[in-house]
Length: 306
Image (cartoon, rainbow, N blue to C red; front, side, top):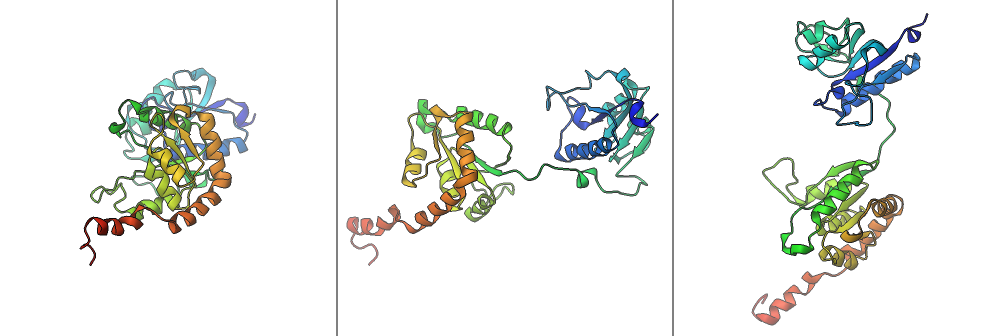
């Protein structure tokens, strides 16, 4: 009898616990283990945290009698959550793979029949499983610049509704969101401290979604296509600036929904880059109100500039 005929394997990790983390590294390590088991035609299920995958199998719903083996993937082996697996699945052959062993005497560690560790005390370090994990390729990087402020618009404010709709849309869209802020701070190392730093970030995105005037303008200056949402009922400065810049990817807050976001985002990825770069060339060569400033000052005060 071959191994895959003897019983099903339950794949677990910190991503399985209700209050555990689901990190990109853990998810990739899991993919590496799945790749190995698929190649060997081993049957398995994955137990997910209900907070991360509410529609998937959870530890609470996994029946111990359905499994011959349990594998704990990635992360540190310590604490009562990991140790609890040994009590819940006592009849299973339990293996830990790609883990850090902090204390070899921890019951979380000693409860496994085999530990294929990546590092630990007196354990030679090996490569993390995420290094060789399969991926589906890169996805578009989308800069996200939203504001919850601008109280000056009073009852016309729809900023919170816009932020909620955009956030829900991002959660189900295949893209890598990069949350940015136009606010500069020279003391906070996690914020851009100069305009050049923010522009450098924008230049590295594939598209931008924003309800900020300068989120749209600076994206265009960087040659990156923005989907601009005007968060003020009836339209305000974002709409005015989109018209001034002759930028078509504009959605009024009253009309904001997933379908319109999908349509303009897809346009930005297909044709928007070329359009944004044309806009950048035209905008940087055009006129703005500062061109008339000195003549205005001279009219008011003839001595200025002499």
